[in-house]
Amino acid sequence: MAGVAVGALLLAGCTSGGETRWGAGDEDPSQTSSTDAGRAPTQSPLPQDVSGYAGDVRRLWSTPEVKTENSVNTIWITGTTVATVTAGGVSAYAPDTGEELWHLQSPEGAGEPCWSSTTLNGDDIGAVLYTSRDEGTCSIVAAVHAGIGEVLWSQPLSDPHGRAIVSGVSAGLEAITVSLGGRGGYFRFSVDSGERLPALKVPAAETCRPYGWQHSARFSVVVTNCEEVGAYVFDTESGDLLFSIPGPVLLDGLAVVPGERLALWQDETLVVFDDDGEVTQEITVPDGRSAGTQAVVTDSAVVGLSGSEQSTPRYPHYAGWDLETGQQLWRAMLPGSDWYPSLWHRPGDAQILVEYPAWADNGAGVREYDQRLGWLDPRDGSLVDAGALPETADVMTFDLVPDGQVVYALTRPAEKMGHVHLVAYELPG
Image 1 (spheres, rainbow, N blue to C red):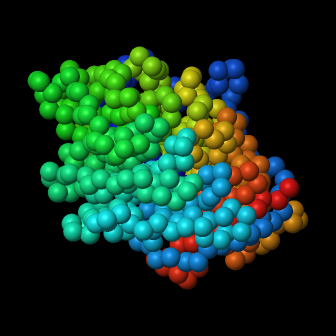
Image 2 (image 1 turned 120 degrees about the vertical axis):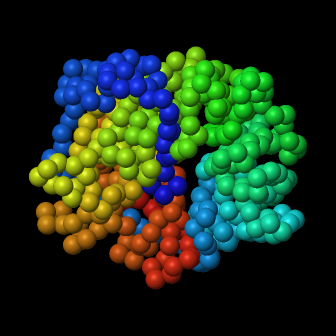
């Protein structure tokens, strides 16, 4: 998950003036200049202050390089293993030494991994998509136990349109789910047996046609061509119909944000729903890049790019908005913001891990140029430094996952295009 890539939801039939697109009210809360406590959003100095400098991050170990086409680069952590999913295969390593514990053979008829679930379920099972050796498409799904190193089962995905463009894959306790882009299809399999689960019943099917799916591990959304009902929302695990969304809704750019509440991106707007399907907030993140590459949605806030100032046009600002009130909590320029610092976050994490550059002229023990890690609080924008990466650190990071005082990075070695390896770093302190 490089940075955190989040898609956008594009709706048709948008209204103008003071009306909202989803019926949450007339005010655009993202433009509010005060928080729910009546305070102005915190404006950090330019550039933003960092709380202390923690020292150097220590490199513990790294794995041999493997070739990859960058199609999939994922880190999974269990209690006993650190597993990686790359085009080079699925492998696991000992957390303390980096010794390879196992490397999985691809299932029968499968080539290399091409997609995976971002996280494991509560039983250390993840989903991996493989290319088909016969067709070359990303069209074989497998359940992988990342703790013991076993492919539990594999199944082909039938794609009547022959495209098999993956738009999402998740691993829940009961179901492994895959959605294919456009009209490629939607598939749910039993985690235990690999049996194909019954198709979800779309009420609109009798009068109008469902034509595309997007999903997270918690919610599945099917878009229809109806004007009255533009989309239906299901529980991904149980398959139960939860509620409908008024239409029309276009499938282009539809993205479901991972989490326990339903949130959808609509271009630069995050639309948040309650359990009954009512829109509670529409939060506009002003810079369109945020929905595509730089926005992070936590349990209580969304953080993303927020434009720049006329005095410093090269230096974009970041901001945080409250998911409950929609109000802007803070706005600041992160260190090295002209290089677009990478924001790393997984569902449930309280803070955001930031990878950012720093230049030293303050006598704080920072080298002339450091690539550093820090913890960003999504509620107030404060950044606490977590240490400087070694000068030999790799130049491109594809996934970055913290586990206590250790951070695991799946990176491209310098001067090694088309290769990745896993590196373990120990944070200071």
